[in-house]
Image (cartoon, rainbow, N blue to C red; front, side, top):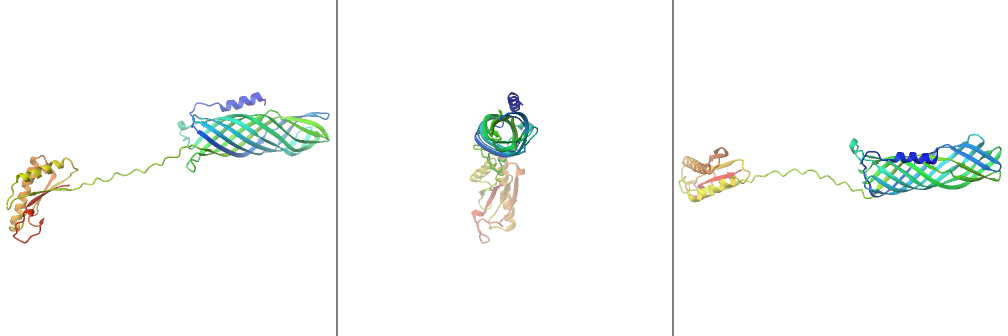
Length: 356
């Protein structure tokens, strides 16, 4: 794969498609670890009378990445990344034979990424947010203790070379905000390539130079933490409305001895009760007649009823429906002021109007 084709492929992978970004705003950090597959390398070996083109294979190795970045609040992010990859060299296919050593790769990249919001598809960004990105940087390839044989001669490669690097990133973030606000689990695939590194070595003690392609396929699992993610506001439990308490209001209408007609003062009190009915939550009006103990119980029972009826008639005249009234008489059985039989007590000659 040429550099031009690789850059084009990575760029096409990173183009935002029609979706809205779930924005990260401000500083964040991330780290990941996983596996690295270093694609079979076409390489050339020149020097010491040798001009050989061959193909080498490496075993699946491991990789680690750490990054610090900034979210712009519109789905775009920019970050600086440090990375490391290692693969053990397995063998060469044709004219050479490699039987040991490995390739260490480490360097720094600058990445641009875009987060997607899948809310329109019923996926909450707090649950899952995919992203794409591209990056460029510089990677050092270190061949350490690579040994083998070429046409019977002993080959040794121990050298490091740095080259321009590029990468494409496809990933997804799974929100862990219920555990720690701002924390996410990330899963990524990265394609990373470099220009061909040049590695110096020896063949039977004579200087040689190896050059080969360097393409890597990396799978990573990691964590990302955004520092200024708003903490979720706890939802207050709905407060049940306080029950409406109806406070009973009582009005006392007093009568002269052995009388059931209304005085001016009595009419004034009844008017107040009728007015109060319209301003309080009243579902029932009790009109209760009473008498003192100056007569016989039978007479006082009838007298207390006449008094109750007199008050009820005045309430009705002032707009209180009789259907809302409960008219009752208690005679001398419920004195306001306890007395002996036959005593005339003004406080007991009354009608109680109770708004409930």
